[in-house]
Amino acid sequence: MTERPPKAETVNDLALKTGLYLHFPFCVKKCNYCAFLSFDAEGSPRKEYTEAMIKEIETRGLFFNHEREIDSVYLGGGTPSVMDVSQLSLIMKAVRKNFDIKSDAEITIEANPGTLGKTDRVTRTKLQAYRFMGVNRLSMGVQSMNNDRLHLLGRIHTAEDVIRDFRMAREAGFDNINLDLIFSVPGETTEDALKDAEAIIALGPEHISCYSLQLEEGTPFYEMADQGLITEVDDEEDRRTYHEICSLLKKSGYEHYEISNFARLADEDIGKDPDAVSPFRSIHNSGYWDMSDYMGIGLGASGFISRIRYRNTPDLNEYLTFFREHDPADIYISDIPSAEYHINSEFDMLSEKVFTGLRRREGIKYSETGLTEEEFWRVFSYGRKEAERFSEQGLLIIDKEGLRLTEKGIDISNSIMAEFV
Ligand code: SF4
Image (tube, rainbow, N blue to C red; front, side, top):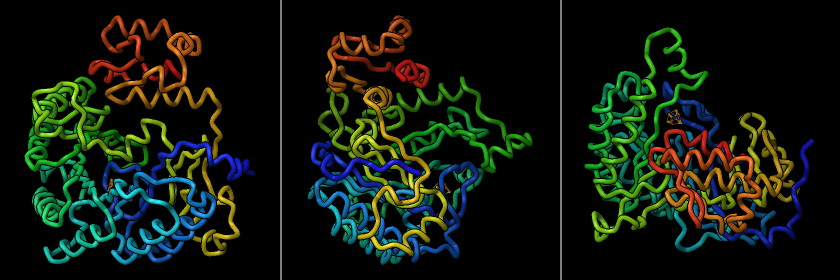
């Protein structure tokens, strides 16, 4: 039996900044490295899923009763762009009806290359429809610009698809585009990865996310590595690639504002102001690292609201059945089938704030924790000695304001962050 969350009166004193995440668990085909919650779109119950999601939006909207302002909406997955435009449009209408979306909210959709349309006409119509729904940021899962590597990854698109979809997105008016890049693909050298990064930079996106490929249990890649069909890139090469990509992106005018994320600087700041902050940092993702509240909606979606961390059930049948059988007005949000439900203690809040804050370029400031420097180190006295050792090794900067990782420290960020949990 799950514990019930605090009733609505506690909602008033919550942080105003709230993000909204909508999960779409369908993809054209499962990629070879994918451990995300997603199913084949072919024959999937997308219509029923749309109806269930709208009911969840209404349920959570009723609970919050317009007491929050949403500053970012993120349609992620899976692949949201495999949903019909009419389905996404109904979902966005429900979002606007049930929540107060700030007029300048960042509204992102993940759109994988090759899923927007087979012809230019279909792609153009789909992109324009997204714009019409208020979507103002596009995130494309490019991963590589090398067709052999894309094939090995099990992606459905080619580098030519990326170039075409990117051009059409610009024509449709998208002036804030993120491209994802994966490096350390089996068989890939640092030089290969740099060529990929260069090809992505050449397109001129406002934001680039770079991730090192992890072989996750249960994925085809994991099996292939087990059978000796592919070999994982060793740690040394992986770290070399990461630092070379970071330096290439910085040279190309991107601010390295989070471990894996880079945002393009304003033209007048490129090469001039080392402290400049990009106007293209992701508002939604920054919310995660700032420990702002966010509401997760959809299958397996996670949320963090009023100190409560929850994750919706990942069981598609359970999710659909629940919303088919219940009316939003009769549902209490804690009745929504969940896989996780946890109320953070004061210490959890503090520890997570340091943990996630250290991912950012700014690191964590004592003032953000509500503590003075002295109080902060009293709470984390058990980690102080180790933190000072990291600092002597040039991995962590500790000063009067707070602490932050150095670029070298990012390589062992998990060990450093673990000192604060
Ligand atoms: S597109 Fe993304 S979510 Fe879908 S299978 Fe590939 S990696 Fe997984």
